[in-house]
Image (cartoon, rainbow, N blue to C red; front, side, top):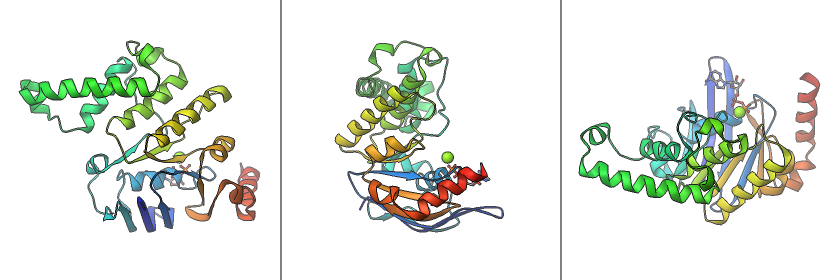
Length: 254
Ligand SMILES: Nc1ncnc2c1ncn2[C@@H]1O[C@H](COP(=O)(O)OP(=O)(O)O)[C@@H](O)[C@H]1O
Ligand SMILES: [Mg+2]
């Protein structure tokens, strides 16, 4: 097992955003987390990527307890992620975004950079090499010199995924990777996600596009009001009464 949470809980003031969630991710699979808006999906990611501390419960990754691991160590331990709203530098080029991303996630210190130490020069070569490799993998080599502000929404989504790939995560967390792109582009992003899994990276994604989830995921967890209400294969989930009710209930209140 790659990742395991037990009774993982997060409160914000009086609100329980995540309520005693038990979940396991197996090495090599694609798992999806679905649920209505505000269900706690992003909060779950924020906890298992160390972005927020949990209030109670435990997280273990590759057999090691990570519950109290500091935020900056999650990437080096093998958990990479994207954010729901992409934080790219729009004035910088596609390639530079990857290089900056690589440096900020590896150990190149500010002083090394300022004094241009031999270590900084070595890291510079490594970061350019890694960025070029990732560019090719995500299919953006042709636009590498373009400012990010000029590339398509779908290309920006690929780049956000690329930024999470530069540290070679064992587990990649994707928060709504296909939000705001059209149907054809969604299929292209799904292919990229499949390719990531096929090269040996375990993927956990949050996604509203049901068809994409059903096609990609081996297993799905459904959250509602912070609690896990169902877990199973795409087929089991699409026939689950509680899931159907949560979605219809959500639609009725929307
Ligand atoms: N940093 C935060 N501070 C306060 N409340 C938050 C914070 N992050 C999320 N929440 C609340 O927690 C609940 C779950 O949010 P979230 O995990 O973002 O849901 P989802 O991603 O499923 O739409 C929501 O009610 C949201 O308003
Ligand atoms: Mg969210």
